[in-house]
Length: 243
Image (cartoon, rainbow, N blue to C red):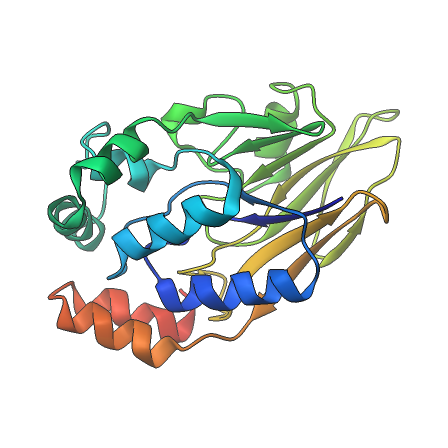
């Protein structure tokens, strides 16, 4: 099986379309979304529709919950909060019902999917260090946990014999029997690792490998839509720099 894992689409239809085209080219069998379909970008409805069409598994992200008033936006930065409030006004009642029904975690074929952390999914914390990762490895039983949320692709490994947790920057990660993995697939619609290209992952169970992949997309169109919608201009500018 080949699984395509995406996260943090953030209403960026142009990025989502490019990623889905790349996944089709790679012969993906199933599509998984690790949350945050909406927020920041100008196409929440279209991104919800497309994600629902293709994904067999979708979990909730913090922006998905905030857009339907299931999460207080007080801890959001001002631009993110404005985008949440704008998104709420764009969504149909059916789209709101769909987002409200998303669960925080899902298990598929022996791997876990969660937007933030397996330790406390609804506290929306981050896994940014080996210390964070080691604590979270104790919170799930599956061999692999796929996450998003930070908008930066990262891979953490745990040697089950030596109990050693490490970080790797490799984009092709072999899945070994004696290891467990926490894999952040990066962001489709708003990368923040200094690389503006859309990020996603492919998990090939036959090859026993996860690959993190980057693709170009039409950033100009995505930026133009953000400005035309009256969303904060900073949300447009950060797409160019990938921050």
